[in-house]
Image (cartoon, rainbow, N blue to C red; front, top):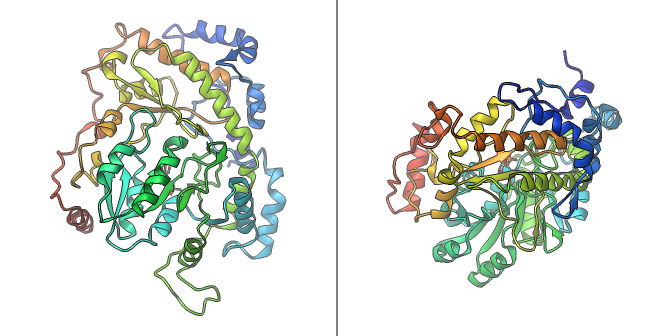
Length: 480
Ligand SMILES: Cc1ncc(COP(=O)(O)O)c(C=O)c1O
């Protein structure tokens, strides 16, 4: 049986590579030989080094394991069980495992400080956090939300008894499109729920000005954006509230968890009440339809340990992103998510966009090829209007989201990745592109991978032009 200590050692996954079939072994050897040069190499003016993150130091000195898979993400909490065991014992002995205990409150204070925001409320996950914040809006009003997002963003709107109206994204930054937003604001619009996609900040100043001019609320789904900066400041205090995730794939993680950040005092009072079953402060009465929005003490402790490494973690991710960009930029038809002006991404994800004709194939086939080379990738996001759950909902044409559907692939990105692993991923991708003529045709344009459900297009939008009715129908179908 795996011990807790083993589990922590596993966190720093070792280097893997074994492929003599495709003649890549020489590349591997060359990569290893060049390792010292690589470490010193100045890529795009940024000196990257495996010593950027504490765990990477360990990983970089370990012998490569040819059988280990390169994972797309890897949670970074702390370096070993010794670092956390005293607090774990303290939590167990205290008898307070949840209910806004010491570690949950400590985490809230640390986050307030780090993000420069007046109120932070820990919650069990970002989906619940979004629902809590959205429940401050009048029932059945409309919320403008990008289609290119994780489905939970839209689920939270529906579960808060509101109507999602899907808007488009900018296919370069992947974030909500201001022209599309401006076109869709009506008297029924109560709020904008913008998403900082993959940790890339939106055009926040413009969104704030628009929301103020139209007298509507502005919320941010910042699930992936902890530590991301806009105009030099960490996200957290923008709009009326921002919601962050602490799930295992995020830059700061607790295994599961999340938090709401707001500098709006009135909203904060309501959030405090809704996340605690709707109780007022002394629990003598229930004021709102509330929910269980508590984060457990163990999760809060994990998040605190992970938060202490946030800056080093992001430095390492940004260094990895530079290697990817430097090595992959020459591939025709492959581009990168553009970092927003005045923003500094945390690189929670590293997304590439493929133009099928120039690249030669699509993201599904590239993902499959990489998987065959023991490299895990993620095909985020299928735009919400393309999902089976929501395809029946009426929406305006969304060309930006269409341009990204099936064309985005998130490459492995986490601070335990060694430079050699990043080099290896790039080599496989370059090889894939170069060998277009020689590889089996199943990989290439026109030959869709079989049995890929995500590829079978849902029927065209059959919406009734009445959004409220469409949402009702979607929920009714689910109930059957
Ligand atoms: C944009 C976005 N919103 C919401 C969520 C949901 O977060 P959680 O799993 O903490 O509920 C995610 C999860 O990855 C996400 O990427």
